[in-house]
Image (cartoon, rainbow, N blue to C red; front, side):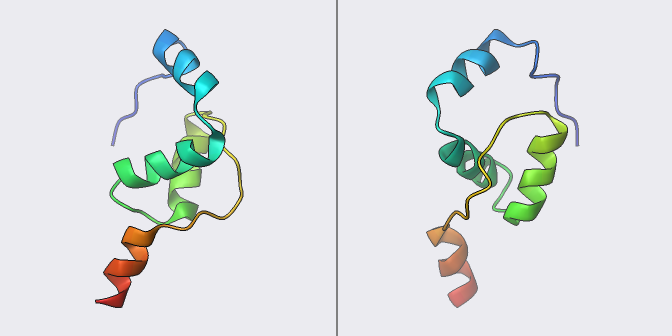
Length: 67
């Protein structure tokens, strides 16, 4: 898996300035195919993307596990 260097991107700076940290973590959780939040946190930490460590509820994951 390859992640481009987002730190030098103007888009990344502008995007994170108006996106809440909670929704940013949830956004990456969705984009990466609903990996566990532990895995998503490690990935975005390596990309140096700020996020909030509060627990997030994903109804899609709960529904998938219930079936």
